[in-house]
Every structure is written in structure tokens, then in C-alpha cells.
Image (tube, rainbow, N blue to C red; front, side):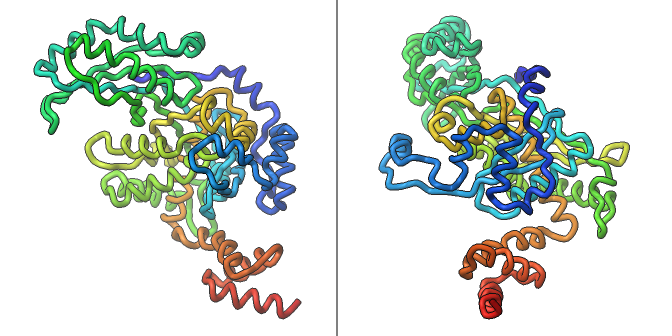
Length: 445
């Protein structure tokens, strides 16, 4: 059960009118120049531009209202991945992440994909599950049928809790009933509310509905309700992306495109059968997904939980992507996973930087945001597999990590880049080398 949703071509084209993701030489610009380029491409408001200047985007009074026991705020870098063409529309991708090479890899893979038509995506309707656990039943199968016979009453009661959602076309659409005959606590019946949450992540709405119908379920079954809560395994709210790449687009001076495609397919084959490899394979996917989830103020813990549970749905942990070679010799990559993202509620509305990130993305719905996010995850996975199947992961990663080592050694301003280049050229990125390079640099000034 996975109802599909499509964004109208008119909506996509209108949103895309001022946003072009192909910015030549973006990484060679200064921070101020990059910000200006993004602001121009996205038509960012003056307020959003000021929030991105690194002077504290989250006011202390707002932070104090978001969580308990606030003592301050914590900042991470926000970068922009370029070159993304998704469903024939350009996107600039805001990414909040501390790990070097993530933004660069996503941008580079998006540039390669762009030359082959970019990414294509699809998604389900935004259906979330709310679980109500019923205990103390000696007749769980009879209880299940009684609940199904009362389907309309249960749905009607749930929908009394959110008139706004109902007005937007959402609300509880159906129920599903699961039986667990033998558990440590005896037989259980678990009723699922299937709720269309529209542009919300949905936790508050679904939890409220689950609590509202609990007394009715006790009356229907004669059992006792315990848990009443949303499930983060959003298997009815899937987002998918695909990409097709020619051998010529992947070829380098050192490796043919055919050799790279073979290596990527071989690496994926191991991840499919080996959970030790799959865990790292999927972590690389989440390197692309989590930074967008964080940047837009969404719940990355829920996304991680749902992704890894979905990777285990067949009984063993496996990869969330598949890489294959088609009959034309092209590389084809696909990804599918739960993606419960929202544009309304929570930090997406309270955190000013999250609002600025959404202004950069220019997405029109939570489903569009989900599709963009999984496309970036697919690009990130491609970057990792391409590196692993050729020169190895460390070469590119350590070259970018050299900037962090330079800062650790005490480099400031323009010194950081000079020291990082020396470390990268020597292919020996260590703190003692950075300290020695910095000392030489300062002695020669």
C-alpha cells in the first residue's frame, strides 16, 4: 500500500525560475562570494542573507523555548552543494555537516549526473502510522475483526482531533490491525492509524489521534491500551530516486568508465549480502541525507531510525541502494527509503536558519523535499563507491581534511589554505606535519 504523489509541472517550473545550481568555480570563491552567488541564484531575502553570515542565527530566547535547560547554542558549518538537476529542475542544496568531503562529493557527483540528465524521483503520499497497543486479550483474532468492523467509527473519532489537517485534505484514512499471539506480556493486538499528514512530519498529529481513540478501542475489544504513539518506520511514506550514467561520464585519466562501473557494481554486491559492509555503505548514504534534514530543522534521528529499520525489513540488514549495469553498458543507481520530512511545525518553523535553508531549496511540499533529499543520498553513495572502487576513499577525504588539521595546528586566515595545500601535495596529512609547515610559513614571511 503506497499511494503515489506527483508534483505538477507548473509548480516545479515556477519554483525553478530563479534557481540555477550550476555555479562555475563555486568552491574557489571566498565565503562572502559564495553567499552572494547563492543569494542571487535563489533570490534570498535580506533577512536570510544576514542569518547566513555566521553571527548567531538562533536567538537565545528562541533556543530557550525549543528545548529544556538551555545554556547556549551550538553551531555547525552550513555549505551548499551545487549542480543538482532533479526532475529537470535545478536545486541548490543546503547541508549542515561537520565532515569534510561530503559537500564536495555530492556536488561533483551531481555534476556528472547532470551531464546524463540528472536524477529522477517519485514518492508515496505522506502516510504515517500511529500504533495503539492493546493487552489483556484472550481472543485477539476476534478483537481484530471487531476493530475492523468499527473502522469508520475509529477513523471519524481520530479525525475530530485536527480540523485544519482535514481541511487540507489530510487526516486518518484507514486502519490496519496486527496480531502478536505470543509475547513475554501475552497476546497483543496493535491497531495502526494510517494518517495523511500532508506537509507535516506528523508526530504530534498522529500521537494526538492515537490517544484520542484509545478509550474507544478498549470498549470495542475489552482489552487495555498501553502504548499510543507514532512509528518511525514510515514504510507507507517512501521516497525514491534513480540515475543513469554512461561509461564516458565516469571515466578518468586513470580509469575507464567501464572499469569504474564494474567496481561500483561489485562494491554494491558486497553491501547487499554483508551487513558489516552494508552498515558503512548506508552510513555514506546518510552522509548526504542527514545534512539536509538538519539544515531544514527536521528530525534526523527519526530519519535514521526509519532508514535502518527499512534496510532490515527482509530479516537481514542490507543496502538502501542498488547499482546495476544495464543492457547498454550504462550504470543505473536506485534508492528507496522512508522519508518523513515536514515543512510545517517544529524547528522548521522556529529555527531561523532552517527557514533560510528552505528558502534556498525552494521546495513546494514536504514530498518534494523528501525526493530531493533521497536524490542527494544517492549522489553521496555514488561518490563513496566511485572512490572506493578506484583510488580509495582516503585520498580525496584527507585532502579536504587537511584544512581541519591546519586549523588544529594553529593556522588562521590564509594560512589554513597554504598549509592544507602543502599537506595534500605531500600526501601526508598529520598534525606534526601541519605544525612544521606552519612554522616554515611564518618564518618566511
